[in-house]
Length: 112
Length: 109
Image (cartoon, rainbow over all chains, first blue to last red; front, side, top):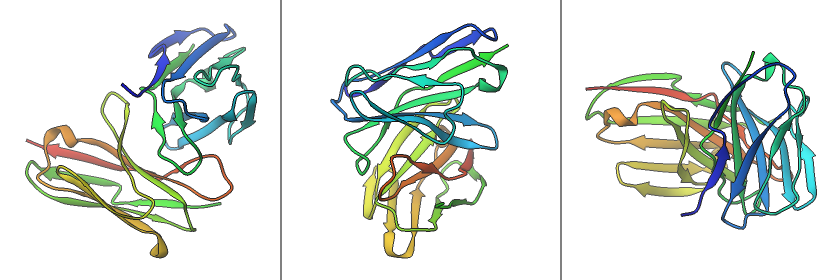
């Protein structure tokens, strides 16, 4: 089944403790991206990647890192999480910028 | 930047009723999708529809790109249709979707 898989689905962590949210797609998509969803602010792009080893900042990249060492994986790294990074996170993938995007199930992160 | 507006913001229906959700965008787009966010937060793909008309069961969508709007039709609504409906657009030269503010739908049994 074609899908985008995020892990974990839920995470509660403490301020400053490094964490990684994994994202994997099995559709051989070139393009992957991360979004966060916050009440009143909607969904906003954090980072995107057009291909292996090619990444760029989205609208809200501060406090996040990404890497794209393999085509199928696009992990989101929070080196030192803070409470303002409490949010619902989505990974997405597509063949290109003009084709259908598929979203993961979401990761609900709480930083205390 | 491009603006994406959805209407109505909230909608309450009795089971079995029909509804139309609207998405207006302020500039030319080359990508448009409709999503349903269920009560568990998952974003479910409904339609990839940068132009034209598509149907999938009780749902259908139409995008008139030249007039910068898209419509999502829900017929014979069911309680499981409840949630938030988003349209999202992409436009030439960018690598992101801009999401609309959403329509929150509640279907009553």
